[in-house]
Image (cartoon, rainbow, N blue to C red; front, side, top):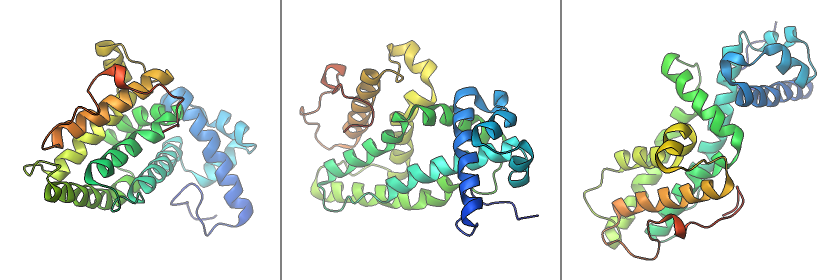
Length: 236
């Protein structure tokens, strides 16, 4: 029997095997996003992928292992896009704004928001063998530290900011409306499943985090929903 994969589509796998794993992962992503981990069925995943249930279990020992693999691929892609941002050539304010906007960007894929909610519960109760989020987190922390340091040196940002705490708060603030839709929709009547609301939250949360770091707050980007651009998801 082949070794269990460390990712959904390991590069060392033969082309046919890679294609099979890719189809299983894509079908699993849709199934988990639509039904959650508890209600998702391996039979349905296998049927959507065009394989047998037995073959799914050949590559993944359990539904939970398959879910962990799907989570890891999603977080790996999102984190890779974050850490690959070229920010050094931008002024500190614009660099931080670009970083914050990229935090939100993947959530315009509705499936990722659903997976994120499931993923929080999953990681709170289980340890996974591989986690791209934790592997790439140090690089993201370094990027945040460098951006804030440049902003302090230029006089754009206040000097009493802990960059790691700021990064964690920024991640919670920008993505919270997708991870905890119920609370946000109840408290401020915003549902990020609607494109205008998603844009409003993105604009407000990004500027809110920036306002906490800026040495002098400008009026160019007011903290008001009326200032949020109304564009289709994935733009801007």
